[in-house]
Length: 165
Image (tube, rainbow, N blue to C red):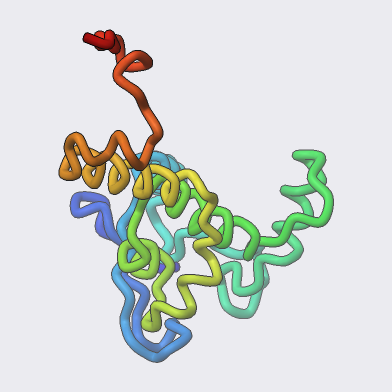
């Protein structure tokens, strides 16, 4: 990740085509937390081209493979078996649970195919239940008095007068 590819004002990170998996540039929106971390890194080391410079003597000059750094982070945090990819999957799943569309989730994850996104967006039943409940209410409203036949409600249960004349 190069500083030249990060735009703190626009809150974006552009992954160049040569670095992107599919060979096409990807523009990633940055969250407020990500921006804060990047600003802190920039203030700490504004001289180099890399956001995450490697240890002195590294061939690339930057962290190219984060596995060892990730192991240290997980050990310090007391986390076992957590993979970097788990964070990606969790992000997609949380977005889905909060009601984001598959299109939005796919853009966030850099997917070109919505079928790929569906794997990450393992929906819980809450959004489905909310949609069904809204549709049910609309149907019952449209049905008017006929809805009573569907629900089995009587005038007495509804607080009406069920008095024989």
